[in-house]
Image 1 (cartoon, chains in turn red, yellow):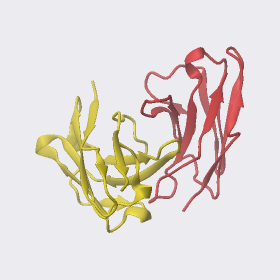
Image 2 (cartoon, rainbow over the protein chains, first blue to last red; image 1 turned 180 degrees about the vertical axis):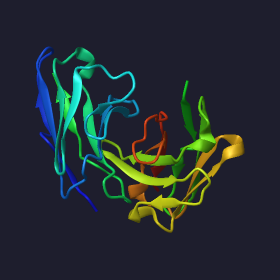
Image 3 (tube, helix red, strand yellow; image 1 turned 90 degrees about the vertical axis):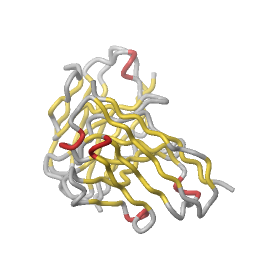
Length: 107
Length: 116
């Protein structure tokens, strides 16, 4: 089973700042990594798939990068609605699909 | 508009059973794999199971194998999760989602609480 480790657990930033979230896999997942955003009481929302492709309707301030075992989600300039928890998901080796533990981006 | 609406969540005693349903609309249900993902209170996301369009392939996380069964009815645009021998650690919000490897649309979830 591939384990995904997200860091940091919490990121404290202000609106307008740049956020960089990390996701590290225990073994290579090629480029098969996705990122989700989840706000309290809501379902997860797909942001990025296959490491760097934005999902439909996702603003350009969200970008993904990486391959193999090291990935990053960057939010170029935080908007108030971006404060949430972010999860990575790998499909490079499944079953099982596995999620990272999450990074909370807080004000 | 794609919509997924879960139902069937409830409070159940350890060892009990429950069946979750997910009603799909706004897309051709029979053309998509479907997935169940759960989230324990205050915790992260955990993939539970997924099912191919024609039910010919089904996959489960090890912790639910032999206890949970995923199924679907394409004529009714519905996805199901039959949960037997429930444990306290199965307590979670259960989400149904469209797609197999990169679930793109998710329902709002159904709360399952396993407690005596």
